[in-house]
Amino acid sequence: MVESDTGTAARRILLKLSGEALMGGADHGIDPAVLGRVADEVAELAAAGVQVGLVIGGGNIFRGAALAAAGMDRVTGDHMGMLATVINALAMRDALSARGLEAGVMSAVPMSPFSEGFDRLRAIRRLERGGVVIFAAGTGNPFFTTDSAACLRGIEIRADLVLKATKVDGVYTADPVKDPSARRYTRLTYDEVLARELGVMDLTAILLCRDHGMPIRVFNMNKPGALQRAVAGEDEGTLVEQGVEA
Ligand SMILES: Nc1ncnc2c1ncn2[C@@H]1O[C@H](COP(=O)(O)OP(=O)(O)OP(=O)(O)O)[C@@H](O)[C@H]1O
Ligand SMILES: O=c1ccn([C@@H]2O[C@H](COP(=O)(O)O)[C@@H](O)[C@H]2O)c(=O)[nH]1
Image (cartoon, rainbow, N blue to C red; front, side):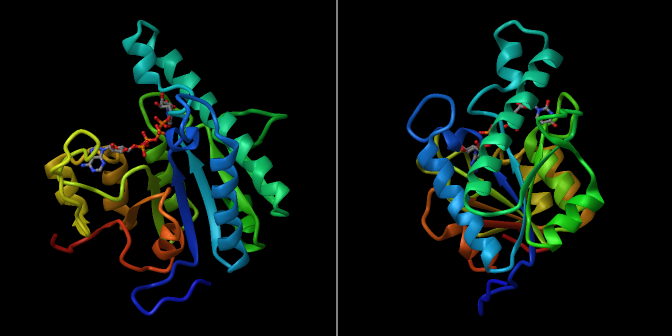
């Protein structure tokens, strides 16, 4: 367990990693240095007794909406996007296994022999004995995203919180990549994110967390130590939860 005197330390987390962030400086694919650094951080958490479930996006390979905008059938595009998340999950399993962790991929769609199928109780048992579970293929359904999959799996495995690791420092008044004058929130309620349509996560995911009281912390995965601080309950990025005014 990671200790903190500034907040509640999480015992079990669902960590959502942006696929796009895995590209590093490239314009697609997986940068082995970024993959290795993230795997090191996950291994550090596991060694400290934190139970880690992972969901990785697919934006470094394919996104269904982008494929549809280029003329492809949307459902086929989403299937390709879900397959992209499986590729990322396999890469992460390899990196975690190389660090001595018991790491398994559980796919939302049958993918034998590449991956096991999703099994909630088996996932919880693996987490309880110190293993890491990577939930792949999103929710298994088109028209969803891996943000929703992360919140769904987080709720299913009874995680203490969902951590969204992304390329920006938290949730802002507007997309900070497009608007340099955007200001970061420290805390927000689910309803504030929904009412202000803050685009860092899809709103379906926020609704799901609101309905099940699952807190979400958004933080920058490229900031050294940010993951550890987020798990320790320290003031890092933006916390989205019930009933706390901004
Ligand atoms: N209000 C906002 N606050 C913060 N970020 C925002 C906001 N609106 C839009 N964004 C953008 O949302 C992005 C979140 O992207 P991220 O790559 O983490 O998500 P993803 O689409 O879930 O993952 P993937 O890269 O795998 O598709 C940020 O990089 C940021 O540019
Ligand atoms: O439940 C899901 C999750 C994802 N998809 C498709 O995969 C890509 C990649 O996921 P990101 O969250 O964008 O990283 C997504 O764009 C969808 O096309 C899905 O269909 N269902």
